[in-house]
Length: 168
Image 1: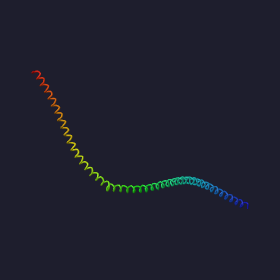
Image 2: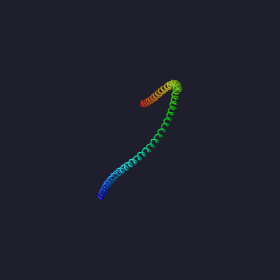
Image 3: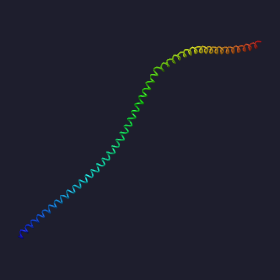
């Protein structure tokens, strides 16, 4: 019996060693799995950090888009105001064009007719003034000739007196 107990004990010992080797192999594999899980966990943490940064960037972009949208709405309001102003200006321009066409043109025509009458009267007055100027020029020219002739006569008279005094 002792042999059979020894054989059993040996068999149990072998089973124990085999189990221990299996446990050691399992522990080694679990350690490898733990290392892999740690690496995966590190990668997941890196990805989480990246996702958090991406989420922050998206929130920043969202805020920027909201600011841009607000600005666009303000510009849209300004465009509407400007459109109203342009409509008003267009109406005023149309009214001015009508005023120019109806009132100002008619008034300019009346002024032009009055101007023509004044020009005709001025031409008449200038003709008379022109004739007077020509007559004044002729009179001045005749006066100059008379003065020159008078000088010539006086010069001749002086010569005649000089000759008479010589002859006498």
